Image 1 (cartoon, rainbow over the protein chains, first blue to last red):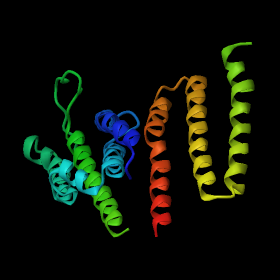
Image 2: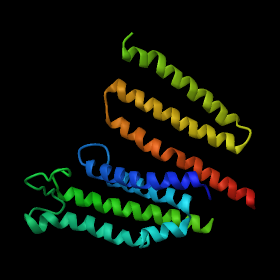
Image 3: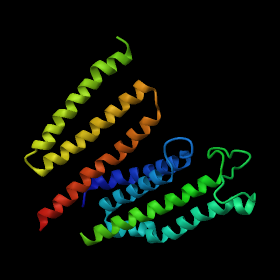
Length: 137
Length: 90
């Protein structure tokens, strides 16, 4: 699709959506949000870019194929489950939390890394599916 | 008339009525383009309704839903337009 309005709007909305997805991801533990919704919003941002600029440009923007994010995300989620076993000697998947909160982000715990893994997996899966569909169409 | 009464007895009925009218257009719609526009307008009405509910129940989390819908809603119209254009080329 060749529309200058859509292309200009996408250049502003893409960073906005990515920022919002990170906000949703970080807020996820106690409030609505989390890795799944954040990953979907980030994927939608790139789908929008795909509609405006075409599939090849989006591939160039992403640098790596989104499918390669799946093993990273899954292993990050698994390692966050093993964190209490290594650090405090508690059972698998016990929540480990920092003593002092970090400014802006808040208290960092193993749940954040699990959510980050979910974020990467959802982002990779949805973009892989949509790219495959739009390739065939 | 307080703000809450105004929202509940004036704004929400208008929203509901417009949603019904848009849905009738969505069902009748002679062409596919009419249905796509009706769907987009239905989402816009939903954004307004969610914002009114955020004020009534004093829940600021509802506004995030409205933000996401407002950012993403036009994507459906764009996608439909893309495929309608593609269909015509064949």
